[in-house]
Image (cartoon, rainbow, N blue to C red):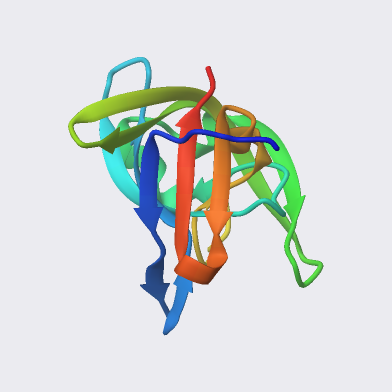
Length: 140
């Protein structure tokens, strides 16, 4: 039998009358430490994490300065984004865990911020769907 231990436990949150695994994270500019809190949905179907580009000025960055990257939405649309080196900070019970992540920021409106498999590569995550809970253990 395989056993996995997790140090962080979260409850799903209501979004548009449904429960989802959502984390509130701090998006931090590693150069000047400016940051903003954002909600982000855990999405194992997303290869890369992507956030709304409108938050970049809040952390002192310019959207167009990032490396160009295009992604395809679920409905087949191609959307342009820009990659910026960012820190994702997770705070739980007064303890901060910092993840360095080249994060994509959308040039178009998107419905929600997504933490994808590039973020999952830095954590162990477990879902307990029947209890609307998820668990995280930082791995790096």
